[in-house]
Image (tube, rainbow, N blue to C red; front, top):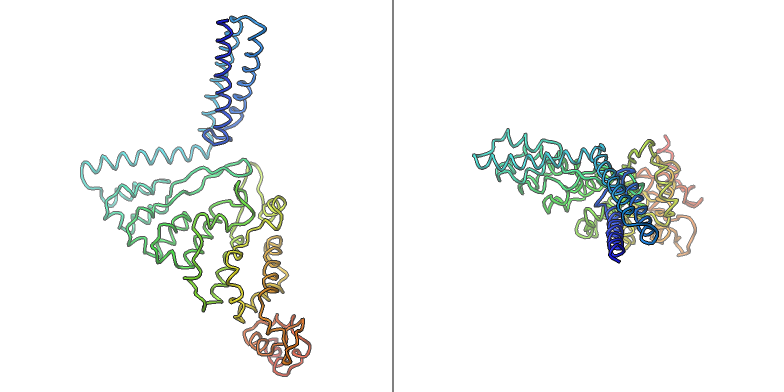
Amino acid sequence: MTELIVLFGIQTVLTAFLVYLVWAVLTRDIEPTSGMGIGILGVITIVASVLNVSLIGLTSFKTFLIVLVILTLIGCVVFALARRMSAMEPKNREVNQIKDAQKKGEREIVKQLKRGVISHEEALEYVSGTGCGSLLQFLSESLRDDRLVVAAAIAQPHREIVHTGLGDKRVEPSGSPLEYASINCRQDRELVLEAISFSAEAYNYASEDLRADPEIYLAAARAVVVQTDFLFDTSASGGPCRDVFDMLGHPNVDEWFGSGDKLKLYEFVVALERLFDHYCPLEYADSYISTDDALDSVLGYWGEEGWDHAGDNYEEHFLNMFQDWEVVCRVLECKAATDDPYPTFFKIYKDKWSERYDTYAPGTLYQDESGMKTDKIVNRAFVLYALKAGHTHVMNWVTDTLKDDPEVSKLLNVESG
């Protein structure tokens, strides 16, 4: 009876350890990419559990202890090797070295401050180490206001390992040393843009005025696409705007553009929707995934309807936006385009803007002088405006009567000449 209780107790421990192992991998407390060792350890635990249950009814306590000790020793060795292999893996080693350098730098700064003031040269050395820019937070207020020191720090954001939906991992910037810079530095447009080029999250630490600058926001949005492989994030739904909005927040277009800047709002929305132009998939394992293959892979899973269009967040502005003839001309140019560096993406993009045009284009473009609706553009004033602005592509949607208009013909001849 005593032996049976012991065996059941051991089985409880084995089961608990197996549950922990699965939980640790799922929550990434243990790296799922640590190698075969983790899987072997799990198999050994399961086998030990099966043997243990068998031994409860089929063998002696002495035999069980011998098998259990052997399996336990093997498990410990495999686990230790797996952890060591994980630490030696290049990406893990890079991040571990950064963490060690940060801890060492922090200790040295604390010691140095106890002895006296840290010099400008010493501060530069501390924050210039790989991934050690966050050491800026331990420096004096004057050094955190020193443009050269801050410039060196923002170039070395902390780095972390991020797991992808492909079961691989990559090292990405995390946070930004700009967080610890003085307000003067966070108001410096050039310095903020430089910080964003190293870590998109620097946008969140810029001054309020700069965060309300559409160009600064777009620079940060592009950095998100460049610095992360959003298509293969496990939460990706098929577009960069979700990652951008999650990291940077939604832009306040009502305050940034108001009701009068229709064209600027259109250009901003287009820039958000064309963020994919800046995407370059990373290299995974022994193969390189091209941009088109990466997109096709995601669309094959989500479907075209799963692609996130940034403009869908600003649908209420489109009716007003399309009142600007320049906006109408540019959307027609998109509808007329047949070539793009990313044909798979462009088809989705073009179809979306065609749908918006059909919904929001001013009815006056297709209404003749008698008020009759037509299926082609009959608004002479609009056509003359378009041709004077160089938008000859609008002629694809103009009635034959307008094509024969003397002034229209004259402008076309000037354009072709």
